[in-house]
Image 1 (cartoon, rainbow, N blue to C red):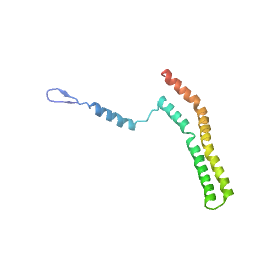
Image 2 (spheres, rainbow, N blue to C red):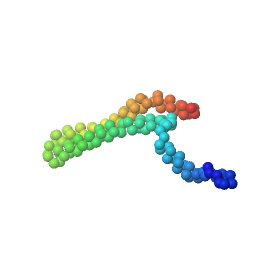
Image 3 (spheres, rainbow, N blue to C red):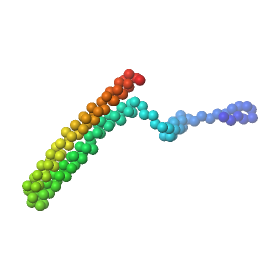
Image 4 (cartoon, rainbow, N blue to C red):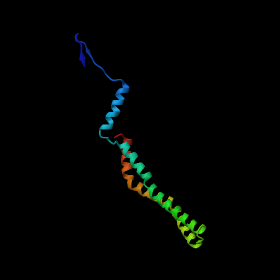
Length: 126
């Protein structure tokens, strides 16, 4: 605040746009407080993502094994070995989705009490 020779004071305030920008910059440098809704979202996301990597790994390895079996049959004329590898690969690809479901269900049961507790708190407005 400044004053001139007449004793009048002058003050300057930032516009709403500048205030918002200052607030955003300040938030980047203050420690984040995780609220209960964010915790609930993260827990839900972890349940959904828990089986993705393992099941993709099983499916991709199964398809590679099946591809090797196809190569054995088509390029090397090793039909019996190719059929064995092809069937093993197909089994790997087939079990990928049930593996995903079981892994996700296991994680869901593990996190269910915490998710229910947080959702109850949020629904009651605590």
